[in-house]
Length: 366
Ligand SMILES: [Fe+2]
Image (cartoon, rainbow, N blue to C red; front, side, top):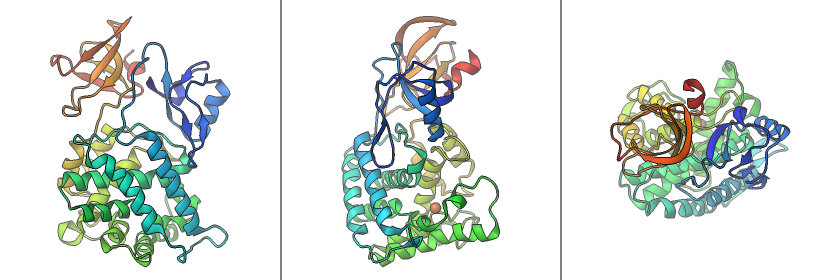
């Protein structure tokens, strides 16, 4: 299996992984032969990349932190709760709707059971959802990343739960914001900016009204505050003013936003998102949490095209959880000639390095 830009997928290729919508319904099954019209439709739905199964990369399996089926189910549950919470006809939050806390606690419990016993905690991007499910997928991802940071920082179970639940609800205040404003490509007017700013406080209020902890509520209130005071809504500054959960959430929220497809741009790769976090460490983000997070991000996603310093071209086929800088590469081309695929373990071949690892790597240098 390999990962490809949707624009590079050709008629007749085989889909490697099923594609789902936000309701956990299959849009397209793995194994399907893709036609030009299907490829176009996937592009229209906002998929910028998909997994392709082919003979050369047969046998490469995508690794996951949380099994994909579990995650899809959780995304669907978040959507169901949000659908109940938000009354479409009046475009308002239905505060009478109860049960959010118990639902999110049970989602947290399931995710935590996978993360807690996973000694390596490698942050790996593998699943792609349709654009319509962004808010729900983003909620789950920010929950997972925040919980990982809490575990890495040896937080107590109760505190970790409060962060996890709060992180999954951090953008609940966006439910009543018009999608046109959320997806707007150009600059926002002052009025639109104010509406966006308000989602932090309204999220805080909703979480408190549902009887959840102050730690959870502050995930919503402070996730857009920035270390140098340039954030919103209260322009809090540094460790003294920004609660620890606000500093954790800022890292988790921005990393997931950058690595997700958005209507105005395709997703960035994990290494590009990490570059952004590093470029803004100390100004936007608490350096401590950026460093903690960065050590666990896999910048070489399995299935990604790669070019090596010896000129070989291939696809990442495996990683070493305790040595993420030295992945295993399935070599497909040697000295610009196709070869019978073989694995090169960069942990064993320290003289070879990765020169390029992105979806255009073979095109640019090939
Ligand atoms: Fe937000």
